Length: 484
Image 1 (tube, rainbow, N blue to C red):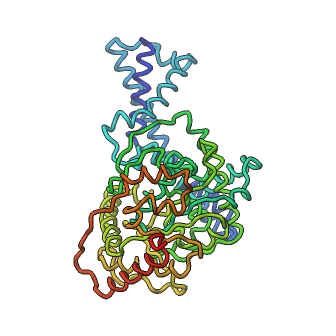
Image 2 (tube, rainbow, N blue to C red):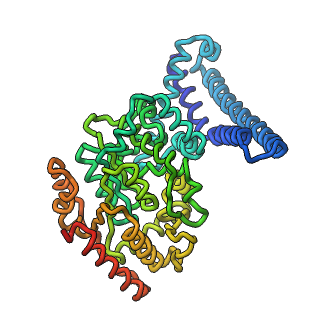
Image 3 (cartoon, rainbow, N blue to C red):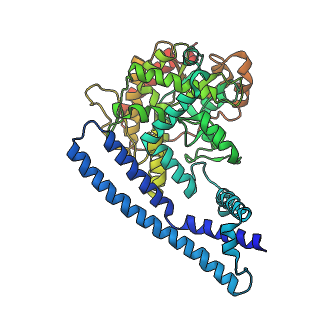
């Protein structure tokens, strides 16, 4: 009976822990401590400024600590209260609490049950998970720690890089036949990435690498103890693309955001990015770390789908000269309509759940939503769309500016791939840059590569559409595989 009562008290304690905002208090303490550490290491602040900020941080730490202690006291009080209630009605023994603190076996059972229940609790509290980004309180806290603080993200990468040491070969990774898929969103980039990934030759970051995407090897070892499997569910885009923990996704942007985000992420736009040689070498090392974490030795090629890479394609080409760069594009009006639809969808989602907004910011995904930032390639910071994001012409002009820039500045061997051609003749299109051994993946893609239903949006600027259509014909005729 004492083990059963211990189980009840432990589960009750875990429930109280998650229902009280204790994790927020812990996060506040962690955030304040990290800010204080950054202040002490700062070379830009004077001693007086440091002293003032550290004094303010000390007061914040004191307040957060008192708040946390109070909530922990409430938790202990609730558990003790439940115990005495059970003892009063004759279910629990009078000496159980003293035995629990003195009996190592009971303490071990309590810890095991508590940790186990904390991990299975989300599955018990949800009938159906609509998205792999639908996290419980524990997962949200872990994501805020791993991704929300650049200092911690950098530390995780540097720790992994140091521990792996001679186990990786950045120079060898630099000569690999990798694949980088980059373009404006809603042109089939995800389907194209998954087609390559199914071949089994490529290692790409997946949802299993979250949230410690900058230390894939260490996180693989740490997370194996609680690794779980989940059925595929439709992703947040509502586009019938199914995802689970093993689905590849665009997470490498975390590296660029953490190490040089200030160089290209502005308050209202994303600008062309030319990382220095040191950062380029670090990215090559990062790719080597990702390859080293592959479950299958056959996965010796890196696969990237990162739309923000259009800001740095020439740097990518210089780091990986043997890599294939694919730039998908789509009929401009249809792609613009799809972008507008996603903008509306994500504004609604992010307004209802602030964590989604934070999540997209951490990943460097600014394609659409409240946090949308347009690509701005003009050296003077001019030339952005003159319409607002809730207007179809905004996205049509975005399409025009993006692909006009890529047509002129993309590396010479880049492959411009038409979405319509890919969907209409997938095996022929993929055969241009996928080896014959991977044609099974192309054949499998035939069932899923279907052109989306056409949209006819109202209020389209006729001149803008005419110019965009002319550029689309130029891309199709000169740069796409359809012309070859």
